[in-house]
Image (cartoon, rainbow, N blue to C red; front, side, top):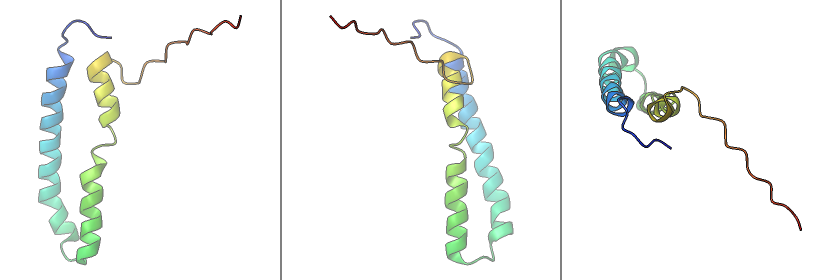
Length: 84
């Protein structure tokens, strides 16, 4: 458990905000020209997928913000209870 402040959390929040802004601008700029003539249901599916795809790397990014590592730490070994 982290007891002291770390620079990763404010940096991570700002980086996440900036990355989402860039991602949103790129999607808003290029997606309409690529799928603008598609049927409405197909556009809806694409926009829902594009709206959720940014979540894929989020878990590892949040782990990095908390631990400084890109993967989750190994779970602590459980103490075995002694049967009397």
